[in-house]
Amino acid sequence: MGRQALCIFNCRFLPPTIGINFITDMAKRNGNGNGCPVPKGILVIVGGAEEKELEKEKEKSEEQETSDKRMTETGHEKHEVLKAVVKLMERKESPLIEVITTASGDPEGSFSDYKKIFGELGVRRVHHIHHNSRGEVLDDKLEKRVAEADAFFFTGGDQLKLTSIYGGTSFLTDLKNRYISDNIIIAGTSAGAMAMSTPMIYAGNKDVQQISSEIKITTGLEFLKDVCIDTHFVDRGRFVRMAQVIETNPSCIGIGIEEDTAIVVRNGLEAEVIGSGMIIVIDGFHIRETNIEEFTEKKVMAVRDLKVHILSRGHQYIIPQCNPPHH
Image (cartoon, rainbow, N blue to C red; front, side):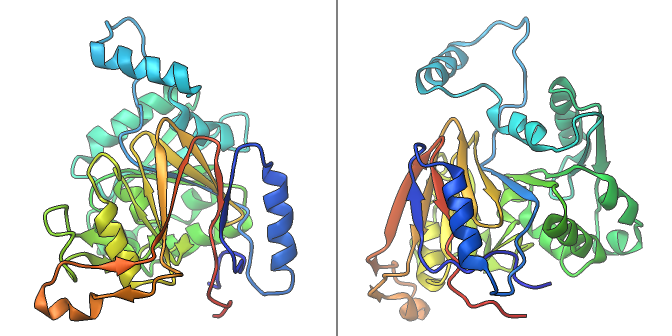
């Protein structure tokens, strides 16, 4: 398939006071005649550890009370991230969500959690897709399920499972075609969020992130191209590993998403932050100097002139598209 987003050659972020209509109009003006299809679908890319339990009769811990206080003070709506998935679905009566647990080491437990919370949020039809191997998905007849669902939700786990099992399959092609042509929701959390982009990090933790060449990347599912998504970003101290990805791929941007936080991406490039935390955007378009070419010496990485944005709930950001459209 061709490129999925418009070719915008400048990047910027806008405060909540700037309406999304301005961004949409600008994107359409820039995209006229360039051959890039504009997706009708919406991405919801979650930083992990989103709220999955509705408060009922259980006693609140001191930690929960502190969290609730922060939400009240910042204007954050409880369960905002998963509520967004439900609210964005176009069908008002009997919507259908397919929960894809292929990345998970506990698929039944993971599906049970999401079936419960989506059910409590009003979705009665929550179905389960899981594959243990590439052979399984090649033999599975999923065309009808892909055609009928209103939303697809990739759970956390191991993002390399998602790319190695689904890459190049008719399932992924059908899903991308629907994303381009229909008003559907493609959502993912943690590993399921990281797999949506390209490049995709699959190895390299905080103990080695400062060493050149120790962060391993591959091709993701490519719902976003020239974008690297990282999750649990603030909580697990992943800034340096993202900086290394951008140092080696300066035509890309990095978007690090905090837990219980997400970006909602419309028209393939218009991102808006929701949830209780922040996102950190790193771009390397203006990098002047690095030592990345000295990776064989296992040096501590160094880079000058990275650009960083820190954005929170309500802020909007246009994802830059710096490569000309091509097939």
